[in-house]
Length: 100
Image (cartoon, rainbow, N blue to C red; front, side):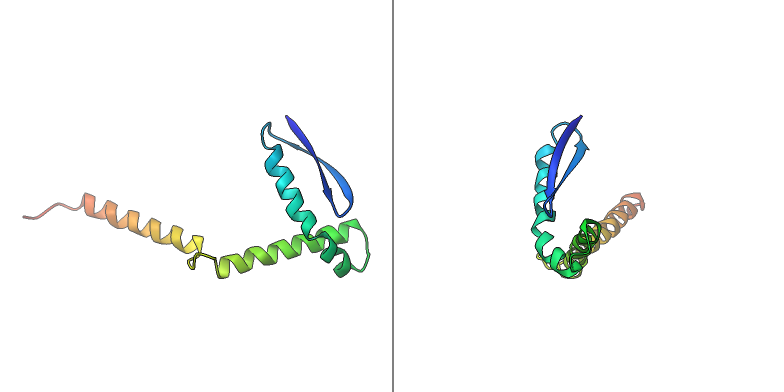
């Protein structure tokens, strides 16, 4: 089992992960740390737990915004629903008897 140490808001956090997932987890840690200065200011210096809360809120806000207006113009959730419906239509067409 792998292990990485993530530095977020000036604090080290040891995290276990599957072997080979270390680079991905380190990248996620860097993305979290990128929000740490703004989160620290927003928390008013109320401690590490509060900073992590603000980081989580910032990322949750980004996720919601990305779902509302994705870069590609269509929400992945909507694309999944469309794909499910198209598969159902295709299946129904395959099951219906052909008339000639």
